[in-house]
Length: 38
Image (cartoon, rainbow, N blue to C red):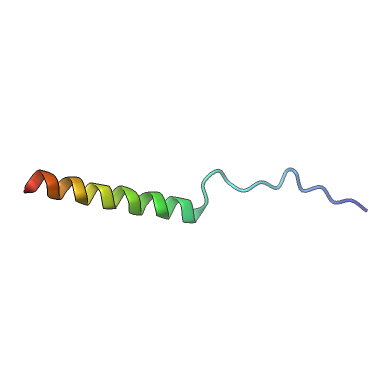
């Protein structure tokens, strides 16, 4: 018996990737904010 899971795909963005992108955006936002405020 063969079970094909080709239809079972991961979503394009996993929660880990979303969190990583959010952290990077926040990190760079803080850097730019500090550069602008100094």
